[in-house]
Image (tube, rainbow, N blue to C red; front, side):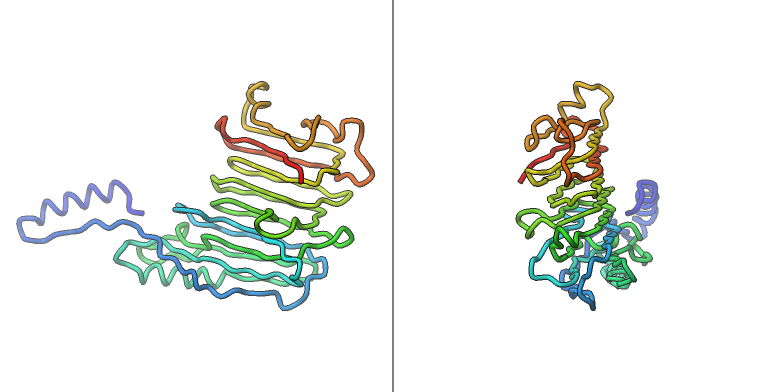
Length: 283
């Protein structure tokens, strides 16, 4: 987006050329979106490979965006679809089109040995369309549910917008052994999963963070962190309606972890405001 110093310079130019009948018009940045991006699917059936999802996102976002991980009980592999967007001056749609074409080259599923990577990055920048303002506005990833014997090792990263994993309106909750969620966008993180014994869950967000777990959930160690030094205020921002007695720094249940416990549940909200909460629900 054009800086204020440029705008002032532009105003001076308008004044200087007004007498000569010249006129320089200011332009706003517009999000040019493509919602017709074709879906992509893995070429092989998922057989327990680690899945990492990395969405660069768009800054500024302008509306709803981020990463949504949906579970489809009928899925055998991984499928992705997206809305790709690029910001450019309102009269320069070609700049945006070129940037979106760059983004499309980064939109992929890489099927490596033991690890699959879902990626969507930024464009290279063209004219009035910058690098950070281009990318997958929304990246939707559909995965199989996994099982208690073949759970997911899942990593989800996002540059801007929200992260939603396994929510009730997006299919079943996936079985996970190791889950790492890290959202750098100023929007919520919502996770609903079935953890298995010996696993580890690390979930980080920049504002509200909500995690839903089965009623029989157990952990050898629970860590809750919010951006608040006052213990009373911090406690008010940590809400655990689904699990009586669950507190940070202890096992759960407090009487002792069960045989099917995860090694650690670690949830962090980096949000600086009292409205930025950390919530643990049950299902």
